[in-house]
Length: 251
Image (tube, rainbow, N blue to C red; front, side, top):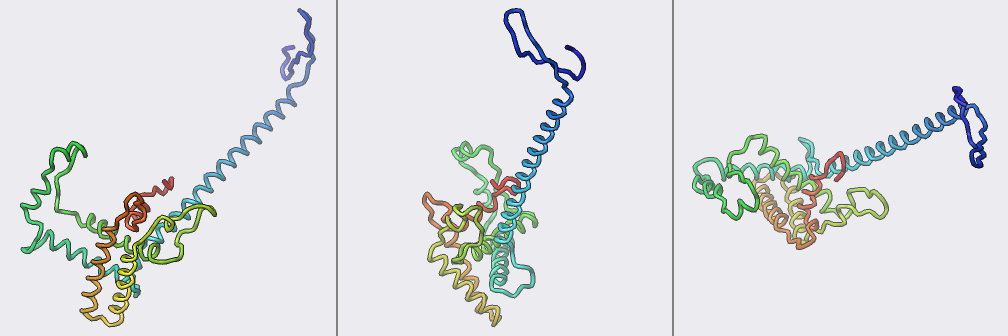
């Protein structure tokens, strides 16, 4: 009964009487091990396929997100490129007005006031950091770059009637389905594009000033978008949500 590579199977029992038959265990064990190896290989392949499919979807989504917010390459002669360059100059000029030179609008007393937080605010938000007007060059570059990418996102995703993002499934919703730019925003953006094309072709200082004024009006419309409960109607909030997506999980 206890021989190696043998197994006993009981097939009859009445009271103390029991009957067994002996079978070779080697063949059965080999079949079991083969089945286990096959099952293990199947589930490993299934897991690998799932990981690869998720990676492919992530890479495709990341590619579309990057393309939606990418800035035009340096030296490109396009209306969007001119808009981006003009906006960058406006941001740097506004920053210099606030923090640099004798005409600085953000005076030292104003900075002190901004650093004082009322007790209810401190209790609500926990530990708060005093206002620091100084920003490292790298920080300014990041802040300005985010604002410029918001314009690129509006141009490619919000201001066009065609879909930019491809659907995951036939019934899935895309960012364009939730976004609702206002007519004022779209009209202002069309005027910005028209003035950018004019500035490209004529290079008149007056055209550049009109472009700056139109860009400022458009930016105010973008920031002042009233969404009520549907926050992602705002192209700016849609853009911020897009930046918050984690590439590893798509959450």
